[in-house]
Image (cartoon, rainbow, N blue to C red; front, side):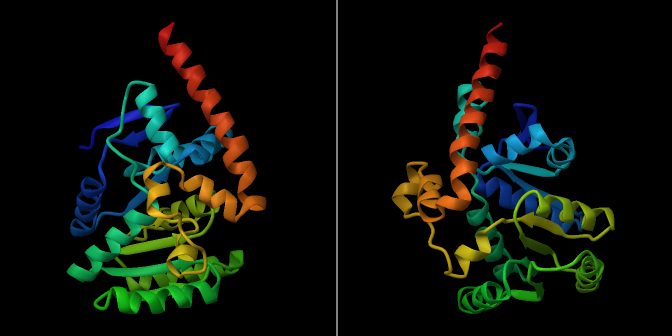
Length: 247
């Protein structure tokens, strides 16, 4: 059983990247379904505003700290996690594992152009990758049943869902409730980056925990409120939690 901590009422597994990959592989080998969850400050804020999301997060089999702010908060609150497990890096590690060991994968999300460009890149990067299916992220409620049936029929080991939060959490939960046996990982906008359509922050910014700033600079209209207003809200919650613990 993974060591778990609590930050602002949210459960997080105290795992490194390697430990996460090893733990995820056990779900594949044992044929157990898994919602592989990553939480950042924005996700924790969502949990405080939406009890349904909070329940989905806290009931996930593996929950990683996918955000420098969560790692820093864990240290400040006295229950440090070992490192940030960034979703896009974890996805690539799991793709490398699948390429090496023959695990099957399914991609669901993003625009069709982005999806196709990503798949072309993956053909060169992961030549032995067993892609059993894919579907863009634009669909009607009526389409959802057909998508579920397609995934169930193709029986992938991994399903990577490139849809924004909280929609991706709801749809993954729906798939799992309908007994689709796979490792489901919501990866947000990772398809956009891995397809080459959006640049990722340079390594030095990642190491200095400034990847969020790079993203805001590149998509200010979409991300300014999430990061600046959201981070202020998150910091206030962390400080309130610290004061409570002292009392």
